[in-house]
Length: 193
Image (cartoon, rainbow, N blue to C red; front, side, top):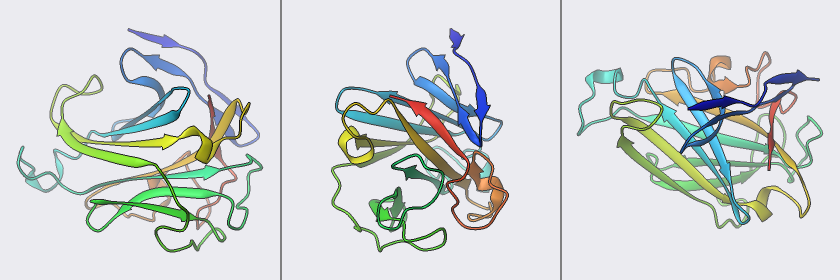
């Protein structure tokens, strides 16, 4: 059962809300990916279902293609990259380690481990509510205090999703869609906490 909460576009910020039972609030869904999030008092859980990850490279249950999911947080929600304030969460070392970085500008970041984090990620191949077949599912669990101040009611997020064979830095890898190079935070999803 899905309940439409509303989708609005306000000054380049997409405000999203489709609630799907069990998986949290769907941020966006297309033929390639379903990204959702769930909020508790202590953490925000972001999940990406890569619906194409079973198709690429003649995947089997034992060998799934690479699937990448990165999160960019506009900490103060001002629509621009603030040097050493805005954060990214991704993976490195063939998707087995968490990479936390601070953004320096739209094209550069601190090395992985740029800030101390208690976030973690989980990656698995399984069927989900979003798709009845086995596919790659990546979940980041991020402490609220790392991405939101006490009393803050929303966060501003940009997602980067790609599957093996995609142009990793291409504009089609970013949600909401980016029309310019780099990692602009001009367009983000405003997610309610």
